[in-house]
Image (cartoon, rainbow, N blue to C red):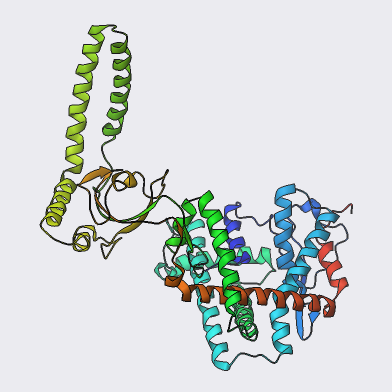
Length: 485
């Protein structure tokens, strides 16, 4: 999950010498909320007492409080001040404008759903409440573990707070309460924080769910063939331009590792093959002498070559040959010791293949591990340049015929047998084979485009209809302006 700004602020507080002098979140003193700016010299000389419950924006029945505005405003202020190191009137106005825009965008779904009579069922409300509770419990667990560690109650951060003793948990809770008192007000304790987090998370979840409900009203369940064709042509051209310029980008999309996995791959660049791999690597690290000796041998080769080329110093040439032979013997022994077990196993795997076993069965037998439970290992390898994911594996597969496999070979610290499955054909993927994927992706894209256009229209309407309580904004801004402005 993504922990919100207050959670991160609590952890940051620990790392900032247990001080929250860099936090801009308002806190209360003697019943009144005041600001705690990043730099005390930036606090307004005549700052107005801060009322967190004051209404800043009204959008229909949606009422946005000053505290909600400050939380977002503070994020922008922190970002700007971290770059410039100063806060001035222009910065405050710019951050407030950005905050105002973002607040309206955030609450448009609540406002519009109410206008359209869209509500959540009691079952949905219970589901969201349970989700909010689970997220808050995760925050609670993480904070207890972190604070127990940083305040010396335990020697290392545990995975779960249930392992803490009551005494250790009390140390964490007391420390958290101290930080919360600085961030908010005296008497604001961990349970208050968790309750506030629950409400904030629940509101975010409701907005997400209502957004989905609003999207469902757009009636974009069907597409004309011309619209599908237009989306296909546009996407194909974009993918071709991207993959031809940066072929390694194709890997992430083709393997389904991109963020937007709903878009099918329509084009393949030149230089890719698909392989299956039997791979066995030794446990642990090789002896450091192996690499050191390799460097020395390379230097000796260069020196010997230069001497031999110029017919110089035969005594030194003989000495180099003797040194080289000794280093090679030592290196071979070290490598044999390190790779002995996996070399034996890879030879067994190769013998099984030669005996008629299928490549898939041998992969399952020899590749199976905690990290690769099935043992199946199929890879997309780039062979027309550097491949940071597969090293030099492609060098041993690119000359194979589809359906054939290599002999055991040592590649980048592991013994492998690689089988070429196919050479990926450059150009557009056969459209007929992915037509349904194309239709679904085009429909998704159209829905999103329609939603964005509709949302922009609602946003413009909301900006016109919203009531902005400027006195509340002035109260907020006064907490941050330098004393001379």
